[in-house]
Amino acid sequence: MDAVRETLTRCFALTFPDLDPSQVASATTENTPGWDSMAQVTLLTLIGEEFAIDVDFEAFEGATSFDALADRIQQMTAHA
Image (tube, rainbow, N blue to C red; front, top):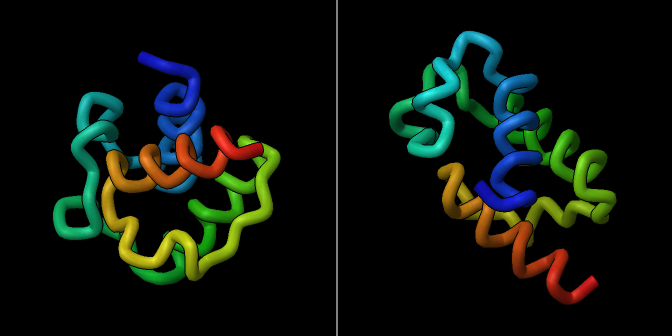
């Protein structure tokens, strides 16, 4: 697992403590109980803190899965 996915996994664990760790990599808004707009804000706030990036919520619009979030983070940190 690369560093982005490892750190993102920690963010998911903090945001969704009841989510089985084996399900984090396949998590989506469709299959993750409690992933609502408030959880999204919490998750994006943690992502900003953990990756030391300024989170523009619009830049993450449509990022409704672990993979989509990881891709956006990798794009943002590659340009940092």
